[in-house]
Length: 266
Image (spheres, rainbow, N blue to C red):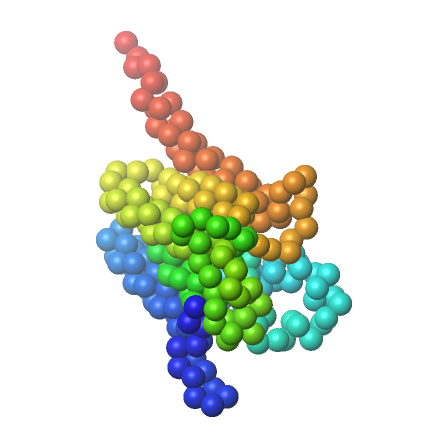
């Protein structure tokens, strides 16, 4: 589509990188605003966001290497190729490492775990939605060939050189599937977090909704991951995060129901 925002000689500013930076700033702003509203130390939350962002980038790349280990084992130089550095990586890998980092930091700083995680959920959703627009601009994370009315066709040779996206072939706009879904999820979470809720349910709903979206999108997304029992590794991870999300949402609901139904003594 439009992988180079500014192109001067051998230097260019990648559109993907700019959108990812914007996504991070927007997510930080939203999370900080929610932290102030909840009375949580905004500086600690901001520091946590930075640490999680770094961990997320590292985790996404590590899982990308893990899932495509045969490619990188046979071509080690690809690890340091520009296309590899520009690639978004595996989102779930970034999420898992970011979660581990968050748990460690919150325990050290004595932040309320589930309540703090809830503050991040809307920002994660909108940030990821913006980031997927960067994927669309770069041409990475493309879908399988299709001939639907909304299919997209890449024609930019720069996109092909950077990401190997096929040119002049109608493809599922998987980047837009995820981006639009994330914006819808953000709208729901923004509404939900401003209502009375139990700690953990906001991040729980995010995990339920996004895991469902990602599981379904994987069926029409092009990738080189090996299949396990007919599903990609990303889909298996999505099922795992889906179960965790359901646990967070319905554990809290069950707790509320149990307290409501406690018989009063005569």
